[in-house]
Image 1 (cartoon, rainbow, N blue to C red):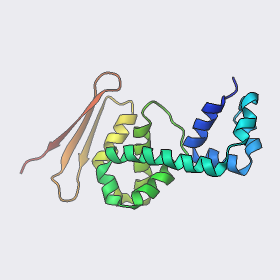
Image 2: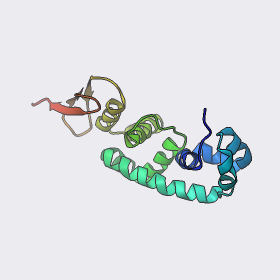
Image 3: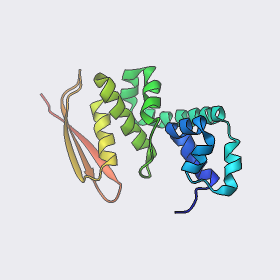
Image 4: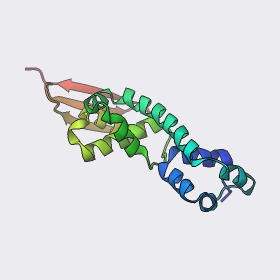
Amino acid sequence: MAAVDFITALGRVLHDGTLRDAFAHDATAFVKTIDLRESDQASFLRLSPTDLEVQARVLLRKRFDQVRRLLPRTCQALGKSAWEHFVVSVRSSEAYGNDTKVQDAYRFCTHVARVQTSGVCAREFNRCRFAISRRGVSLHLVKESGRIPAIQLFVRLRGERWREWRIYAGV
């Protein structure tokens, strides 16, 4: 396997909090662990762990803004604690696909559902699960307080495209 270049290593460190922790703990060992190109090692070792953490927070805030657009009800229900939950949920995460904002939203919902079940909007969580899955069809009964129960239907069309419908029972 080829050695990792400076930019790739920097991207990984900024994206993953556990890698930043490892770098802050022992930069020299970290550089060897990730198999950084020898010509880039000296430059990488000059990076400041504090500055890396500050830059990572800026990038996290941008990622959170994207997730907030995907999960408005969940974020509204959580209020100010939404940011803290988000930081914890994506602290250690490898990207596994193209749509990282959907992955972030899914991790966020999964984390919140684990620690505070009433905070996650079921419709939004179902949408995240379907978006990252490979399923062709998904059907859910959604009961939200103060709303008429609905059937939430997802259908994958071609490739990554999919559609969502909600069917409400009339009384």
